[in-house]
Length: 296
Ligand code: GRG
Image 1 (cartoon, rainbow, N blue to C red):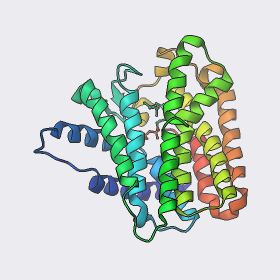
Image 2: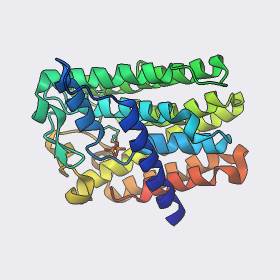
Image 3: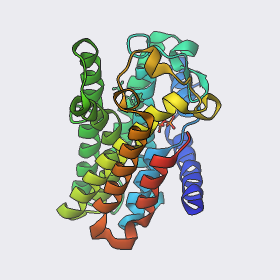
């Protein structure tokens, strides 16, 4: 676990450097507030997990991190946009995120919507910048995969399904569908972007797709559990918000003990999904184990 902790710390340092250089600041522009709002949310903390998964994918295929930092920054920008929009009064109406007041609390609702839009569109501008020496078809496949996973084939669909479910009720298959969209899809985007950049074989892509689904479910179930018994100071957000918002989660559909067992089972399935990579994928196996055991 110490090796993974070290890996995550370095991934966060590299991601923050890339974000700082790839997200501009235009202090004297008429729209300066937009840049302040985007950078506020980007640098308000966060574990930088999706870039870390992307780096682990690059390592798996032997690709150099320095050449693909734009993708790492783009994945974190897309994740941050989703949090900014999710916190809005029209969605979850949250005041705190990553231990800080949410973007709309500081910059107002309109600017928070635009900050999310700016983060999302700039992410695609970055991913589509030519990368010397890279086969353009591989780059397009990577950016296309991120678009599908972040959009109608994943995150936006999951969020919409969750909104719809609030009036219709929810069962475990629907909950899994929502989690696959809201959480697993960006994990898949991160790993598959690396796989496409490397021109990975179809069976390798499929293994990573299955891993992302199982590891993402594990991560999200642990999130549900932490919302019940986590520590607010460590999490940077209030606990008990799912119950307050009457959200059905693994922690309300099941006992906490059963939910923990489901998380552990998904972590084990995620490890098994990586069999074709043998020991080269041990780092990703460590990620899955951490997703089941994390406290924040
Ligand atoms: C608004 C299109 C749109 C989508 C919103 C991501 C999302 C969908 C909602 C945020 C709320 C939530 C609980 C989503 C599930 C994914 C998740 C656990 C996000 C938090 O990810 P972490 O823990 O956050 O990696 P940090 O702050 O560490 O980056």
